[in-house]
Image (cartoon, rainbow, N blue to C red; front, side, top):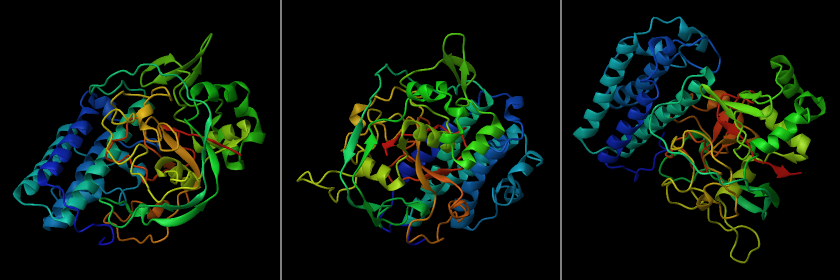
Length: 438
């Protein structure tokens, strides 16, 4: 764990308290309007029971802060047996004797109060800062999962406030990225680092082109209406097996109306927005579209270079500068990226021009997660010294890397170096893609 922690990085307790409170308020806002019946979801591989997931969020603070830092007994006697995700098989979570809604909320409240009280009592160390940020990030990830779980289950939109975006159109064309040696991964000394981001290492990247924006619904509709789902030549072996088993002929939430395509947004069917990025598509669908369009998915290194690199001063090659965000090092203030559920859905791919990367790529953070070509593997220097040892290691080789963040991703998580990873058949997540010419 020492490798992960910058001993000089200590946040004021007021900042940590504010973040703990803010992320908890967001979590509770995502379930407070749901009835007890709605909290009881059917057994599915891609969701968890709501009460289990809420208890798991509280257990994470209990285990990694209260127990680890203070050495106190668990705040729920059987918390480990109920809510430890690596002790309880996914399918068994529906059969557990979980507390009722009030009992779960009471456990969450006890852990929350203990967390705030210990923060209030002293100045946190670098280790404490790290563990608090880890727990906050973990809750942020589950808040995003609650959002797309509501989409999966056909529940209404979450009730927290959001605004509406104005149409801005599409953004066709590619940008040219000069080749060079690029440092992929986090640098020692970065303020907060996940284990799979360790460590920055040189990667040789040949010159390439990449789309200015993600693939739109309009573009993907052409593939669908050209019977792309039914043409085996565009699909990998595993992709074709997935498609035929599921009987898929369009993205999961699309439906053909009398005169046009519709798309389900939570519990309502709406007209398909032509300039929104296609979303809720699997890696297999992204790969098949690329083959149909004579394009390809970018590698993780190419995506990262397009998002965080800068051209050299002489216009030849790339500089040594690596940006934290596509637009620079300032955090998103609402003008750079579609994050934090501020708009409660996708926007046109031409929106947020102020968030362009140095090379002219738009929306590399926010709107939709973007599939890359690469499997999820450790970077050179990876060791299991992370407090949450099961965060990355069990999943290497079985999943694909996604980059960028979606509209429901928290700004705290969405940086250029962040690596998300899911199985290639997942289409419940808010996932799209951009392409490169072959």
